[in-house]
Amino acid sequence: MTETPASPTDWSLIERWDRDYYLHNTAGKGEYGFWAVDRMDGAWLTMADGSRLLDFQSQLISDSMGHRHPAIHAEIIRAMDRYGHVFFGMANEYRARAAKLIIEDVLGADNWAGRVRILASGGEAVDNAITMARLYTGKQIVLSQAHGFHGLSVGATMLRGYRNNISSAEAGGPVRDVPGFASQGFMPIPPPEGDDFQTNGELPSIAATRAMIRTVGPENVAAIITEPMLGAGGLFPHPDYMPALYALIREYGLLWIDDEVLCGFGRLGHWFGYQMYPDIHPDIMATGKSINGSSLPSGAVIASKAIAQFFEDARWWSGTTWDGHPLIAASIVGCLEAMLAEDMIGQVQAKGKIVRAGLEALKARHPSIGRIGGSGLYYAVDLVGRNGQPIIKDDRYTGFTGDLSQNPNAIIGRECAARGVFLGGFVPNTVKVGPPFIISESEIDTGLAAFDAALGVLEEGLGF
Ligand SMILES: Cc1ncc(COP(=O)(O)O)c(C=O)c1O
Image 1 (cartoon, rainbow, N blue to C red):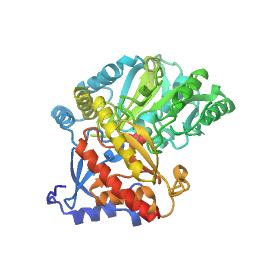
Image 2 (tube, protein in one colour):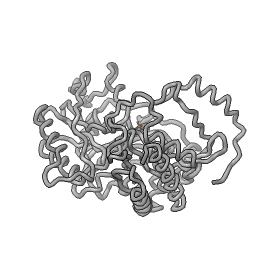
Image 3 (cartoon, rainbow, N blue to C red):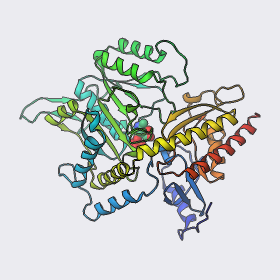
Image 4 (cartoon, rainbow, N blue to C red):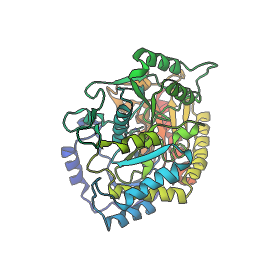
């Protein structure tokens, strides 16, 4: 591991300002760790103390093209020479180029996608998808899976004031509000069974979802929202799940919102997770993260041809200041053109096989590894105790209370960091292995070696 000198930044001052003034996420004041990054290149982070960490989980399974990918970087800089911000009422070159790349070059062959709107986060893409499904169907309820994660931004769309509604272009024409705007309108369905679930018949999760649709009445359900693989929840569904859920969705005339914020744009070794299954396609797709390698805040909502036409024919009062921002659009253009030129999907498939084989080899040596679920360059590795059961009993139902520092994912994270590798997890018993697509074979070896050693420490602590 090469050592680079610390930059001239006064890190003690930065630490004080960060600790005193920044409103931190997920950690309380007493447990917040100041993990300062000085710079980033490719798959590597250079920390404030000059040490380097291999980013083996692409930050939040987000920075797919590594850090500061030259093609993305160059396109943003070219765009900055011409553009600052252009509001959505005016067009800009990059917005149109990004839309053409997504709808025609990436999704054209699947022949369902009509239009895309470029946004500033995945949460916004999900908010838009929910609103669009409700406006389009005139129904309120959205069903979503336990353990699913779709972002933390829904609240804003519930506020009164100028809000999402739909009006016609004729004077005095109808104005339609979002059905159920001020009420809950969300109901849970079970998570999918894992891909190791043994069954000869219908999956219990599908039977329970059918029962839920019948109970609330399909006439009240706008959409079901799912992730192709539960990202934060770290669960790869049973192969029967998505085709059976899709059949239910079509049988009851619901919309399918496919949340591809984490899985989309290559992560699972396909452009989109839904492409793992033949003959299914979303009605509305939420995307983000890998759309531009997370080089700038980004998201996009993609509507089927019919839904796109519905909104395009109407006058839809919607949007934010940043919709179609030229610099975000330029980062998408840079990313997607590079992905196409470098056959990034092929690379993810090839490197994914190496990662998967490496993880299976670790499982053969480490009894603390239970299920490994995933595809392409995202694997959820479940850790188990000596009885083969989840070490933290609540597992994916955890309330994230108490001292989290002794959770298996935290122990693995600490031990990996001590060995120069950034790796961890969100739910307590699961480690998320999701390196950037540009990772080299030797860097994969480095990441797996640190995980190997960290598992040894975990097992020792558990008395294996
Ligand atoms: C599946 C999924 N949907 C939505 C989001 C929200 O995206 P963002 O954090 O960009 O708002 C995330 C973020 O991790 C996600 O994993």
